Image (tube, rainbow over all chains, first blue to last red; front, side):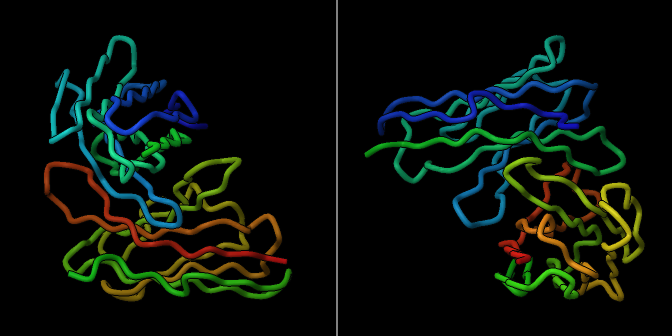
Length: 111
Length: 115
């Protein structure tokens, strides 16, 4: 079963707007990561947030984590056409190194 | 570094044929993961290795699937016999030990079509 579930499944915005994607999960986690996948390519790691962290920033990315609600959000500010991709959250329980991925949000940024 | 290398990038075969997918992890990475991605089921972990030893193969769908890692720089995923429902994109990923994170580095994938 999927540990992470992203919503929305698809999001279409204009260049310059902010994009927010959400991820919910079912069991306790150690870390939560966000990955990007461009069409026809492999996944690329964007950012990781640990279970004892609430917010993290990296460039135009902002990730929040609410362990009480078992949810995370990824905010991309000032979006660009090049941000068009699928975005996945992935969770792990620490020592076993297994990642469980959600089904992703397809983000389209229109120029 | 060249990143994770997978071959072939595309494979089209007929039902019943044997398929072998190949992966070269990033040098120095001692964890290797095989994933399968489909529209219906998303990205699923099939098996992972640590120091060439299979650690968890609970995601391998059935006996038709097998994976090996004969050395630190090479792994194969074999499907024999292949079936149309095996059509998917197969990814290999690797990561080093002890980075303090669980970031995985993905290859470009092999798109498998079984007719």
